[in-house]
Structures are given as structure tokens and as C-alpha cells.
Length: 113
Image 1 (cartoon, rainbow, N blue to C red):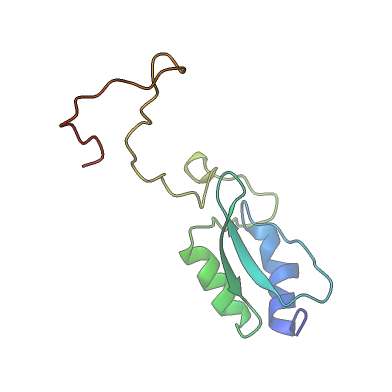
Image 2 (cartoon, one colour):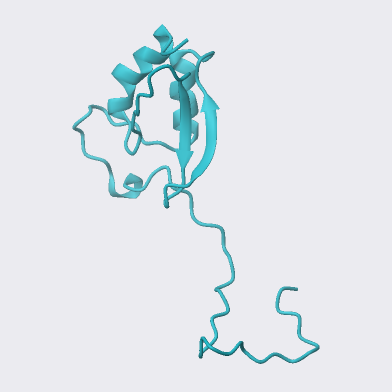
């Protein structure tokens, strides 16, 4: 079902209302939502063929996409990067002061524990 009527209605009428949601048409491909990281790395693919327009809208909003009142409506500052989630809290990388020699550690120390 390359662009079933429900998906086609979502694409033509709803996508312009969402901030940071883009449509890329791939001829012959089944419609799917591809979620990307801030580095444009693929995170997940969600097939849309069997979903209604309402289900797709609900999914997109649950994922955190901001829906504007009109395509040219302003986006509040707190939603400028929506649907970005805060990055997981990771310890800062252990960068050696001199990149040619690894940092010295006590043999009994286990930094990843």
C-alpha cells in the first residue's frame, strides 16, 4: 500500500503542522516513520501502512513532536528541539592530558565499576 488513503491524508494535511517532522517520498516503498538522532543516526522505523490517520497523529504526538495551530505558526522556544529527549547521562570521556600516552591508573582501580 504505497501511501494508503489514511497515510496520504496524514502526509498532505498533518505533516505541515508538525515541527521537525519531514516527509521523504521513496517511490514504491511502504510508508514508515523513521526516527533519527540529533546526529541523523537511525533510531527506529515504525511501519504506518496499517495505521489510521488518527493513530499516526497520536503516535507522533506521543513521541514528542510539537503540533502547530497552522503550518506557519511560531513554535514556542521550549519546543524548538522537540521531540529531542535529553541525552542519557554518561560520565565524561576519560581524555588523557597527553594524547600520546594513556593515563596512569592504580592497578587496583576499576574506573568502570
